Length: 405
Image (cartoon, rainbow, N blue to C red):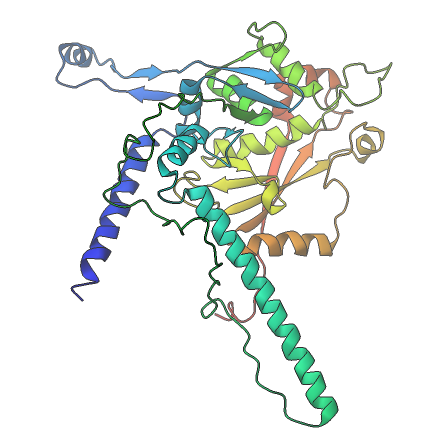
């Protein structure tokens, strides 16, 4: 017990310290932060005498460049990228899986050169091991089946075949004389500042951060329209765009590939994909959820309670457009996904994918207002968003063996 206890306590202390550090770094749920001065200051006491709050609002006023080709807004300032990610988990790094961490990974790779494996190398190694395990298991099952068929044909008892499992399978060490196997974790006495041995006395060129934060159109419009903390620049003139220009540009990214219409040159339709998906995005953001893209799990959005740093996503959201007037769907130039009646095969597939990764599937129905009831001219203004309605249905996969109680 004495050999195990300290290591467990040490691991618990590290996890607790890391959790406390994350709580400090990601304390603000939105880019707008409220700061309260010290209550002991003279100014705070003076305000309190008159019943006036001394709390001030901190608006970061970030900047981004609209990119119509990728249908996103690029935040190139490292300071603005850090603020938007740490205060609400907006966007993703274009060279990272989630948090913009390309520069930190490159610095870590330099430190780890020839000493230990980086996190990317560890991930690729474990993926290769899982792939090899699946191949070995499939080969063992095939050999067992062939042996059983041969034994049945010869009238004898089949020889036992060992089929590897996740608990018993061990990766085979590849004989290599070129380089020794590196440890997965840095040694405790290693130089963390990157100035230790192994550099050969050569001064390395300083790294330049070439990564930017990429915001979806829904995230960018939420920051512009609701929080007023993002300025979008025109990609050609680099001048700030007005609210009306941003609204028109975000709508037009989905109409650039459509054939021109002489009767409706601006395509003022309520089923514009940007409007439909923003209605769902705003619905969940307004309820306090952190909303991220979910294409990896065959859904439109993923919902996090606090953010990707703290927990895995609990829900996967599929946006399903519903036309208030079916005639609008027949005459619309847009072909929205999931607007037709879906099959049970499709629904079971998506539900099973999310169930396997411990996520609950939500079908989010966005009702598109009818053009006969609401004037299409209203689409040229953000005021049209008030005419959309959102309702959601939680779908769970029934497993009889687990749900008897």
